[in-house]
Length: 127
Length: 367
Image 1 (cartoon, rainbow over the protein chains, first blue to last red):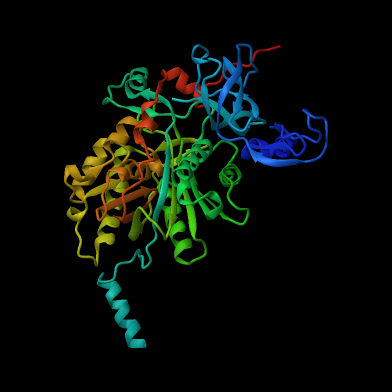
Image 2: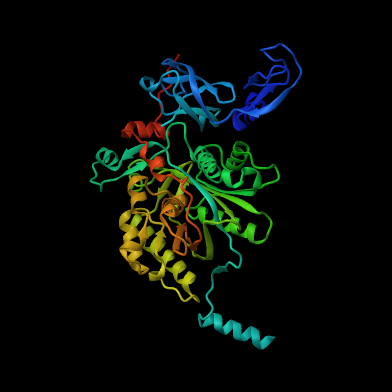
């Protein structure tokens, strides 16, 4: 079966769902109980992350676990509604990467756990 | 009553009534929107041929990257289809059913639909059908969608066909088999093309077997003669039987065939002229897509067709052939930009291809 943490995060992983704080409108991609921005627990509205964004920062990792492709590029992306999302890049070479470039979200296999593929969204450079 | 039964029996014996599944559609069921996805990764036929000492015709095939399989391609094709019809108010929330035909994925048989439904956001009460295990499964997903709409059980259905099979290394199929996915939104209103008639012909033939996600074919000459050529001819004859049309009346003919040579041969056998046959460029640039073969050709063809044109589409797989008569009703919307889909390419060599497909694995270090 799927690992429990993947099942718990299913709305974020598959539906790209983010939470907007009812108090300060800060949008966070991960499951939250207390807003990390204003520190209050007034509840959250569900919003979607969107499927496009720009690269805020990235890192190229040459020392990766066995099941990942080398080099593995991890990017931090800002989407149009102000959500900051972290994810792996797909089909990108290190020399193509630059801060500020536009990316789109693509559905890919992230890794395998006990021979069972785990899916999710990666980012791919546009154009 | 008894006389009537005897008469009917005699008609069957004389072959006047054909035995087969013949469906003439009374309602205007057709394609409302469609999307397609082709992986960026390509390998040239010559690269495969040179590794095995073979001389092969020029061409290339799309292959799944290390992080792609038939599930990810199906999701991308579906998202593409909904993006195209979004402005017309058709969303995943309208879908009453998902009929997906998908080549096997390691450890994940029959799980495509739950992942697809969750990712694209279809309602929780949508019917989910997982089809597969044959190169005719794409046609089955269409037939199931048509039936669901004809019976008024659903208003819109999503037929997703995704093929990402891997051929055994060194096999005859290896240089030709490709990867790709298409998604068709089937409905009754504002259609691009209506499905006028379908006909299925079934017999006994086992031609391809899959072991995990590796596909193996029985001897190609046998599969071509006794499979493709024989069954395709029968289903076309059955489709045209009782109508006043002949193959020459169709502007475009799409036939499932594993390579260009077989496509030409079958085309000739059913009486097509060379300019009627579509799909050669798909075979040369993407490869043979198995269950998605004819549907990818249709997605390629639709933007270039004008209203009132007729299309004959014949699918075949494992002893079943299904023929469709489509009539174009309105111009395909311009959102479908085929060139964008196939121009972005990344070539890989043969060892990289073997690694991406999981056919060779890195040695686990001893520690």
